[in-house]
Length: 437
Ligand code: UGA
Image (cartoon, rainbow, N blue to C red; front, side):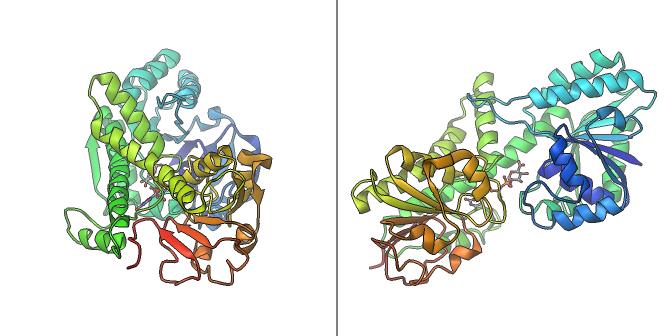
């Protein structure tokens, strides 16, 4: 079976590599020629653990890449995995998915093959029926269910775990009409993951499942962050003990209860904003989700306030920010809360040094000469009056008195509580920990 995958980002490239490594004949399509060149040479164009070796294996097998969607003519399944970013007002930006759909529509008009088009990109409810389907039918002159199939198949993989989650998904969601095309997709997934539940539903439900999933995760994080803020005001109280314990209640579950500086990344913030925008347009006031977002923003404001309270002012002060990636084991800084923190500190006149084991090159593209870039923790915190740990990189767990000995004022804010057991010779504040009695 030939498979086409359009859009070779985290989702598309992981899926393409895993399928090809299992022996499927896969053609990956992307408009970015530089990216394709790297992929052809076995180089993953971003940092994602385990993907490099999977890509190499898949290139030895049957993975081909192309810039041209027409090369997918003989594919029975065509997966769309392009990004759906957000506009300034939070609304979903469908430009990329519309471009791709136009090209698929033209391809369908010329071919005698009857592929299934499978949308993995995150799309707001009704996009498949109101945007994608009309384009496909208009440009191809063909009919859904007869000449081609169309299925919505949201993806739940996490960056840094992309290969694992592609190999072992917890669920497969398929939205669309239950016809022979759907049966084909269902069989494909059944063969790939025998024991994984497959949920068959309609388009709109499949679409909103993805938003419900991500916005629930965001809700868990904002919830525990609010509890963390309360814990901070009670001497000796520890939010991790709270999360660990409430997580033992099966109705709550122990994952996504790590308090921190707020959720970031290319998905959670964007999806919460998009569902808020969509809900408002429907006339449903999204009170809870708006509070989730507000609570998330509050985390960075609290860090700024804490710095002000402890070092007096920010203007002219040297402050180190440790960790720019939105989570460890990635160089991705999209919508990272660290970016927001650094921007706010720079705006307030702080002299900022930053460090990150993997994301410095990406950070340089954003901050340019507004901050200093250091390649070790001790160099980053040297002469600083405050250091803020933002990302839970393993390297930061090793911070000790030696690493901070050249700080001017030893004041550390640990937003992830990763050095809380170190008893450093420093004034130490951690999100979610009450001050020691
Ligand atoms: C998220 C979802 O977890 C995936 O299931 C989904 O497929 C993906 O979005 C997507 O829609 O494409 P990802 O963006 O890779 O995945 O990142 P997460 O691991 O969810 O982390 C998001 C943010 O939440 C990070 O900033 C992380 O530090 C923060 N977080 C996470 C916490 O602060 N506490 C937690 O307990 C968990």
